[in-house]
Image (cartoon, rainbow, N blue to C red; front, side):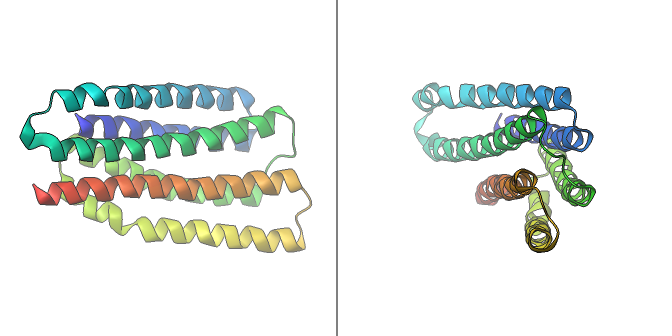
Length: 203
């Protein structure tokens, strides 16, 4: 059941994140509004899972107490992921809706590069959980550094741009916010994978 929940959340995270960046690139507030609604739906589903913890723990037999600890930890990470998505989609929608200066082409391109890499990892995760081949999580975890390094490099690049050529504070702020929140999103996903992998190896 937790595998199904994870696959569902990760697959939707992948779609929403890509859609938000597309909406930003095209300055399309209706796409961004749709993504915002998608995140709200996702958040309320994760909240439903959290609300069910009480019944889950009540119905566990003695041998499954470790399982409840695992489940609570997994839900905390799913919540982190949904909150990062919410922040990114909200900020992006607000920026475009208030007619602020659009992101530069170079910024859009940098975000698309991150999306490309992140999307391939998220797709891999969905396949792992749908197929039940949990040993492949080790491959997913091996890509954590690669993505974090890429985000760090984009942050550094933007600092340089801000010092030399950037003229829009709102634009710079949005871009940094997206990068930093993407880093949190990646960490949430990788923490989730680590927790699952540790538990899988223990079985």
